[in-house]
Length: 132
Image (cartoon, rainbow, N blue to C red; front, side, top):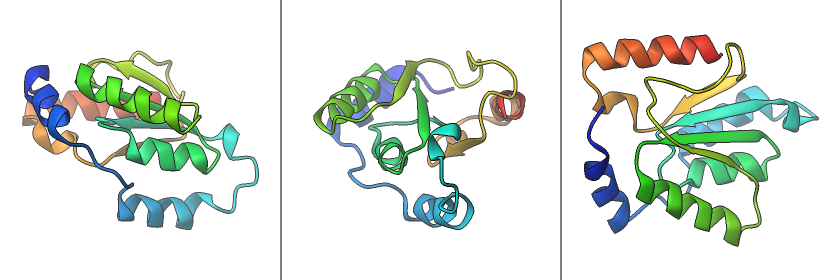
């Protein structure tokens, strides 16, 4: 995992304002037919400034985000507060997810896993599999 300072610097300059188009398409195809979306728990690893989580929250899902950047988490909290949206955020290491086995229905990643080396990625994928 890259040092948090690298990501703090990135997120202090800018964050995504809108959710990923691919995420919107995926959610629409696979989850929009679900009536009680609050029962669907979704985790975003490397949640950044929160654009994806805000979209998912507004669509009624129970959403969680984890990021290694304190700046990103602070920006996300500010965004969610301004939108009066409820999101569970965690400053942490994605290679050690602090959730129970089988806790989530979906784990998403927009720009996180690719920035890790192979050994770390294997550990992260193992953690994702555990919490799904």
